[in-house]
Length: 245
Image (tube, rainbow, N blue to C red):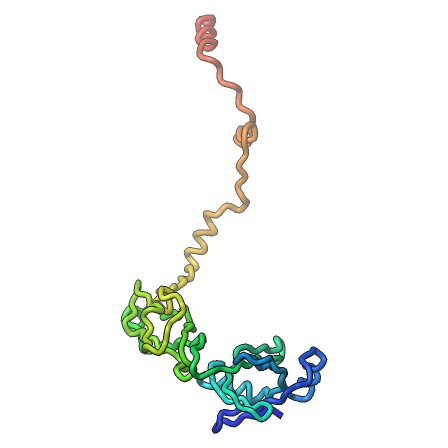
């Protein structure tokens, strides 16, 4: 049975005989979650794990970036969770991918961004702080993976954007995300003013009761009370006037 202890940060896994769907169902029925371990130039190994301990790792401060010791077949190796699947309705774990890692080789991971401070645009200008990016991709050694990266938003005002390039980091971290990617900015509060009863009544008084229909050609003249006689040409009108005289 897969177990893990918080003090020693060890996750014990049991090797499975196969990695087929039937075997995975059998593992789940037994209260475990199927998984696979790969990396370090070794063949992938199908394993069964304790879902409670996996959930504890995912919900810890470092989350899926947590590095732990994986105990498998009498050997221990450093590993981390790289992928997992949940059942969409009940939310139970369906499968977990674990990767063996070498502590002297750099990894590419995503680290959460945490807002720090109160923006001037919120405190003095009445705006709202909007966090656009919640993670940043970095490259570093396993021991240098931060649990989060703090973004100081104190100086943010309307029109100013905090970008990935503005995030603090030491020389141990290399940002892989686009340096121009927005992280946070201050936006205005949009208030919808409800119309007064007088305004509603006035609008109803001038509004047409039926939709207006635009007609063309003869229909336009018919709407005015019948078809109008064609206008006489100037020459005929002049001859008619002389004859009457």
